[in-house]
Length: 386
Image 1: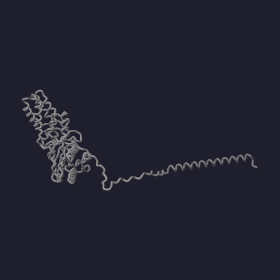
Image 2: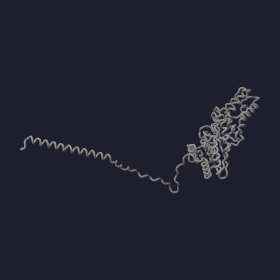
Image 3: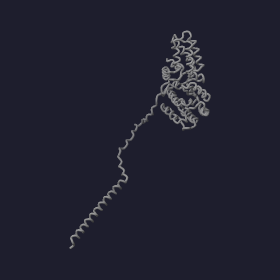
Image 4: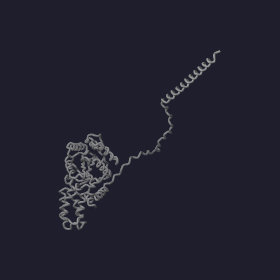
């Protein structure tokens, strides 16, 4: 029989061995579990089963013998008629600080008409861009007409002033747009002017005015130098359902203008309106390009109108611009923007005298329909607050 101390050492060794095996097993199991957990986390998630959807109901068919309704066309704006526009101009001129209007109203409200009054009146008229010739003519006539009664009779004084103003504004000029083209060809209107006068906006407003008169219109975006010009013009056209022909940025303006006129001929529209890039009147290369646009367009259809846009606030500088443009493009009519408000007003008379062409339209403000056909009577009524 083994000694007791030997037996104790053997038992102790067995206990230690069993404990070590147990710990190893537990650690091994935990490590295996940890590895399995990590493996599962690294696997991609299984796709979820698609949610069943109800089958799409078949489109309702129109009863036999009928036509299914088509989607409604996008609505377009209804431009304001021309008749109410000049009435708004008269109201704006009457309530403005227009230099010419103030001078005229100051004259007929004077207590007496002495030499100093007439001298001040004459100086103010010249300062309103009326020009020396028209000013001298108007003052001489008024002094003669009002020499007896003066302004003691305000009604008669106003009548004389109204009559003479209408006369020098020349109501005999034909201010209607020439829309008479050859058979099968549209009227072609070219709009020109210097930078910053608002040609693209004016072309859009003119399109609205023509649409309001029942004309079919096509727009040509021949301003290919200003990145937003074509987009701006198309927006104007879309608002009244008018198509716009445009080219790539930097394209040849004459080519785009020709394509617009060609499209107008093919579609049988009444009027093609061509917007051109603004150009300084003293840049000969740009003015030559304008001449090229005219020549290229004329190969497809005659230009019936060339409208020069002038800023009414530019005064004598506007007249210099007008002379140069007229030499290059044979201007047939003037569009005066910014005539309401602080514009001097006399530019209307002077530009007509200088160029021998009429003012045909005037800008009234920033609204979409703030462009009105010009009339001598309406203009004078506005100046005199009538």
